[in-house]
Length: 81
Image 1 (cartoon, rainbow, N blue to C red):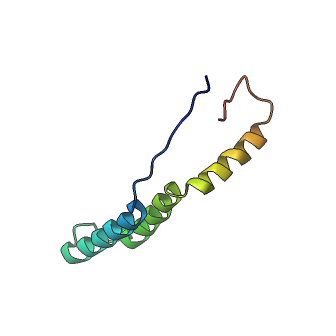
Image 2: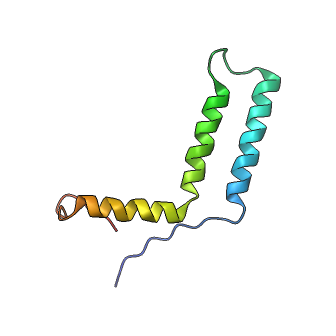
Image 3: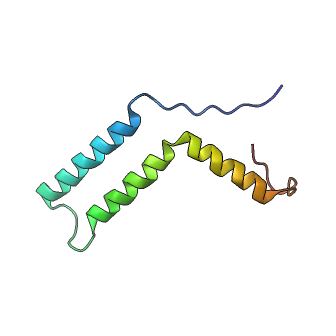
């Protein structure tokens, strides 16, 4: 038996992230609920970048492969699938 991990991405999730963050940006602008100087636009951009990266499973696989290469023979300290 080989353990397997499955990560499922629902159709349209990447687009819904963009839409949700655009709505958050509008809500912040209209309501003014965030303190002045918080730089909410920058925070939303960072959120968008991070969440988009989470949706990039091929990129995640590349990073995991590279991490496995860097860890090398440290199998008693690390397990990289």
